[in-house]
Image 1 (cartoon, rainbow, N blue to C red):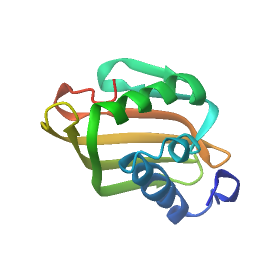
Image 2 (cartoon, one colour):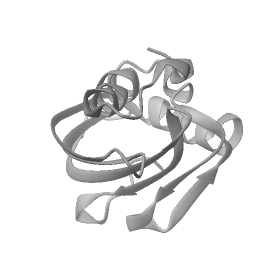
Image 3 (cartoon, rainbow, N blue to C red):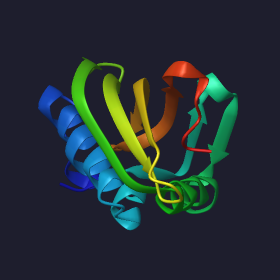
Length: 137
């Protein structure tokens, strides 16, 4: 499913976009597939760290490149979603585990992301990470 085939009236499409197109590709370090989930002018804000990355092909790309270099393994699981079909947005709560590429240290977090869509892609994303961590940089 690409951004063009997204059906904004279907709850399951929001969940598929978040879990299968976005987080599954983050976990597998498929950078281009991850970036395909975003509009060209998207913003990605780590609200709990007061950090914003602007532009799919610039700031957001660099953020994910650093994430993929920093961690040898990333796993997202235990999803719970609240979908607002009329507002074209979705809130997702989940657990994430990152394993440091440098020393194998594991970081486990409980996060919540708010996804605001335009044309079946993420226009704005807000991330809240537990424990004051910012694993996205």
